[in-house]
Image 1 (tube, rainbow, N blue to C red):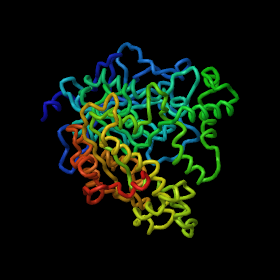
Image 2: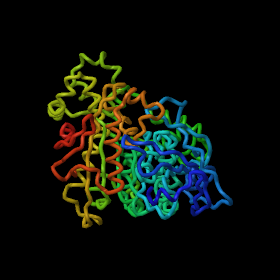
Image 3: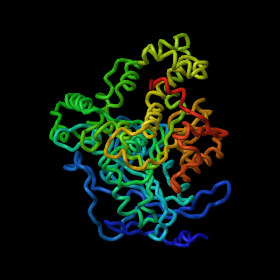
Image 4: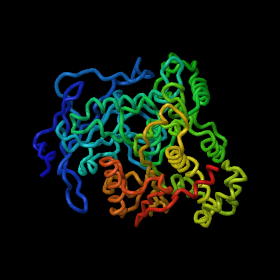
Length: 517
């Protein structure tokens, strides 16, 4: 039995002293690996611990306010409230329950050894959802497998949509980004009591959560709050201020109010969520929507405000911000390929070049792009368009970030510092449910939770456990040692390809490079 394991008593509910009061969690048995139960036979879950006051009333559009102290012992055995999302509940690729309530700024902490004597590495996970949806309450985000392998895990709730990211005259910009920062500050202040080492924090996330990771990596103010970063299918915001102002104007007009703090505060959250959906969908058909996203990016997300986020993230990374922090990042091969699966027969006679042109790819790049993607071109025009959307939204981001981190730095305040490694990967295993390596598919492999609820809808009935071992062990290795186990990108553009079997290849994103020319 390990020294850390001997610190626990599964017969007594775990109680931890935080800076604001005592919290009581619950013990659970840890999952086993193929090799056995691992070093930690149990883990403790502390759910819904508030890291800030509820963002309601006067605090709805305010910066997060640290939570005040409470008396006695606070039970932390149920999921905390989550930010609400627009429209009726709809099935999503990842089960992410919506939990009602006002105190939505909270964290879940999963730990194998809630004692300051443990000093284990920490993984802080930020969920995705396009900055308008998602929830940390997903059973897929349970940290049990990471706990089994000696990693304390934290999942973070934050404000979504316009309440979190919209531009409001008279209110601070990037309120949800401030939520991320406050959550990371809470981790620095409290994680030692849960058995974590505040000097060994890796921030991770997928999709919009991956974009959050990259945003934090390129943000000077965030640098003291974590040591490493792991980005899965990162979708960057970097919304220009003018675009954010235009969206605020459209939304205010729909609500019949002025685009000010008083105006938006007068609109109930439920009504604003309903109108937000309309403001984000100006119409124009599928190709107009695709072009808007590819050419203009997202309308809601972290905004380049000139203060907190001083420049687009790739530019900040190129000047050396975050260069001293090791980074793993990558994407699935066909992130949005499933979106066009139903159009395969309708598009089969449309030339791929024409589809690429309608989606916004300049004429001079189409031949090079098709030549670099011959394997996809053989599958038909719908597959080509799906790959192009995936490349434009996700895979070019990964490649640009890797290039920015490994190129000669542009002169800047951080450019003289040391440079840590950058590791690039691809998730290429094709789900039998979709026939492609689609968006979100790698998440249950990352968390090693292939037996969780609704896995079969995304990964089929018999997803390969050996691939989960490979993906998860690489993440654990990185969190613990700062090295996922393959060559860095700087060493010849080497890329890990997660598949059955996995491999390491030279320049695994060569097919994306024509889009960066």
